[in-house]
Amino acid sequence: MRYLWVWLGAVALAQVDPRADQLVRRSRKKLKSLEFMTVQFTYSVENRADTTQKRITRTGTLWYRPRQNKFRVDLGDIAILSDGKTVWQFLKKEREVNISTYDPKEGFSLDRVFRVYDQDMKVRFDKTEAFGGRSVHKVSLFPISDTTEYFRVEVWIDAQTELPQRMRLSNRDGTVVEYQLKGYDTRPLADSLFVFDVKKHPGVQVIDLR
Image (cartoon, rainbow, N blue to C red; front, side):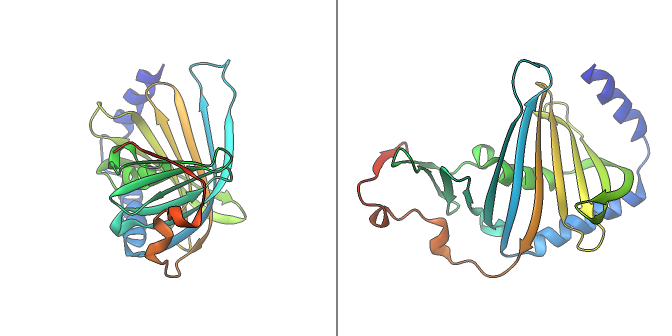
């Protein structure tokens, strides 16, 4: 069935969709213009190929400096930080921090979603609708290569701010990952926010995997 959707998407995108192309270009440009970003999000993942697995939903906050690949995400019991070179994963209940080298392919998933959104893909305008009390334009993006983990990216772009309010990745293995974003804050963020300071967490167990 997934191959049918890929084929249908390819047929629909045989010609360039000017409206969708302009919407995505403006949205990407707006995101790139942001030096700092703080956003609240709701994250969900489900495996549509295996209905025995339950849908997982979590909420969190992301602090992001996209130009420098710096991010910090707080999921309540877990905090993930990166200064663009090193990644710290802090397990709060276990009082344990795992340290590894930053790899763009293995970064925090929302960080990857933003980078996927910036890739060269075929685009299609779907519709304009209301989401979260705001008018949004829904577009679908399809990777040019068939070797990517995902075969479709759906993005709901705020009609006024031109920023993504919702993003959904459909992967070839049947998993669907979705983020709902709200409350974009572009005030400056200190570099210290993206570094885990062991001295501020006495007694924490450090596991260096580098």
